[in-house]
Length: 89
Image (tube, rainbow, N blue to C red; front, top):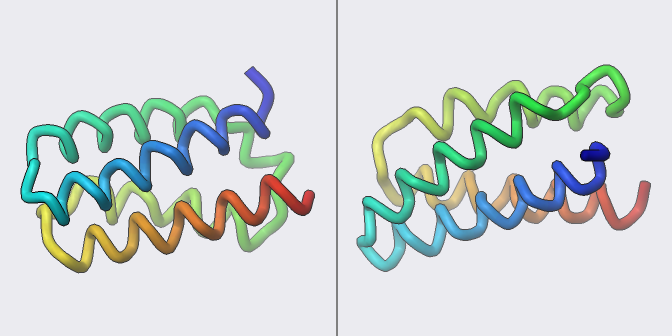
């Protein structure tokens, strides 16, 4: 898959993680966290701009953390940043 498709899938999964945590559906959030990590591992970070590489690198810390409001907020924020990157690059 191309980076654009991988980033789009990652952004969608991050949004689902945020929704799952806010709905207190933690098994759903955990499942999409695993999927997001899988997408992350397939992304070719060398082709990304520096700030997007930083975001992708920070995902491990966020996705492996405890399900909390902070994780939901971070996942939603990163989802939006990644979507904007894909739309405008």
